[in-house]
Image 1 (cartoon, rainbow, N blue to C red):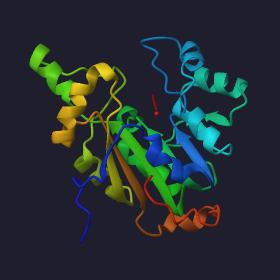
Image 2 (image 1 turned 120 degrees about the vertical axis):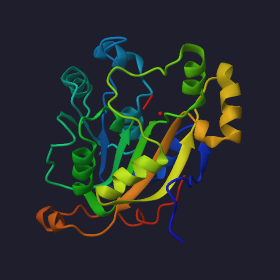
Image 3 (image 1 turned 120 degrees about the horizontal axis):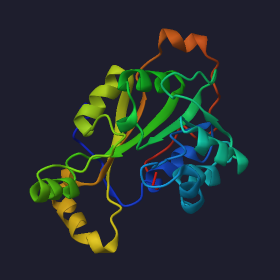
Image 4 (image 1 turned 180 degrees about the horizontal axis):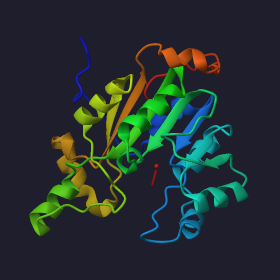
Length: 243
């Protein structure tokens, strides 16, 4: 039976639990590696403070991980630290190679053209590669609470869209990607444990969602790009912070 868009495997506290098995080997690309919050603080200060940045965690697991971001200041700072990162738009860049895993943590809600963004990631995936996307859940308990209190949700200044599992699955399908797994993420602090209880009973109240997808089938574009061989055993991957 085909997987339904709303069917999620479960709920986890740390997205790295799910990501780890897919990035330990092979060629890995991290999209949005800087994770800037310029409205709160300058990029250099944030990078210096955020030692647990998702990109750094990915490099710890796989030193061959490449990062891309449009934040020039952040890219320069990471390059000075010795990381393999480039400044560019993930919807347009051409790496002239494919990746076994592409991670896009809390990025899709920032892009101007979701279709172009996903299509370009699809073109850069190996035939059996995996795309891992996380994005804030518009129906999370925190947002519902804010609407009750203030009449409106809290919106990130750089966000252009919101997705739930159904709409994100539809966008991925249109880009030639098939979702094969999904998780609700709740990484609340101790003082917010009551929100986790709410999410446990109605998981659609969870803070963040994660979908994993693979290319549906070969595209005409596939013949135009060299394939990156996947290391032995990496295709047999089971399910296991951009904070």
